[in-house]
Image (tube, rainbow, N blue to C red):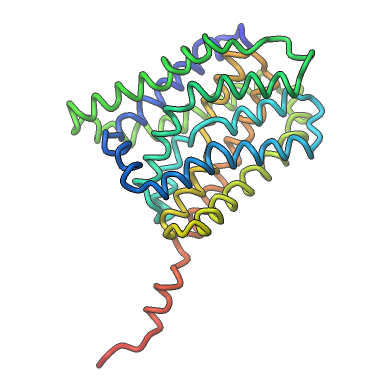
Length: 300
């Protein structure tokens, strides 16, 4: 995998493009908002950076992945920030889009440092002597900074200096980001077609369980924390919709293990289905307070 054009050039370029698009919709206030709504932000970050990996670790311990590299790939996905479609789905779900954007931005800033460290520890723990490539911490951190943080900064600069241009580019870039991700997944499937049935059999159920469980837990934890329904929807979607392109680049480009890419690839497809269903349910199901208001008698 590490020698292919897809891994060396296409994945990094697409991730750079996706993060540039994210920056086009960000302003400094998206980061300051975290300080103004600390409880909602803290719950969201905790679910994203703690709850999600813990659920993944539990699945790795319980399920049979046959090849530990598949399990490592799933764990790498849990270390990644929210995906490019999370903000869009939060909007469709009538959720708190501002919170969703802030969570994506904040976790994305931590990611270049947390992903390499957690990936190195996880790979060593799960694969041991079978780990053929040592995860290079220093170069991985630098690579993720260059390919994720730098384009976000460039996008924010464009938004600050030329806001009208940023607004015109925002929607097309987001659509292209999803298209590029799906194209990469299709290319990965084609390159590894012979092993595809085995990989799906061993990672498909885990990906579905991880996605559905984390979205449900994220919504539940947010509810226990007393967050509003729009905030709960934002947290649930942010936890369930992962940046699969980042996971694919870490596993396929930086580590160079094709087997590790399949869990992120399969999860990336599943999350659009489950996330879309969740958004539809939230959009069409009114809050109890709205139902009570509509049922109450009116004067006159």
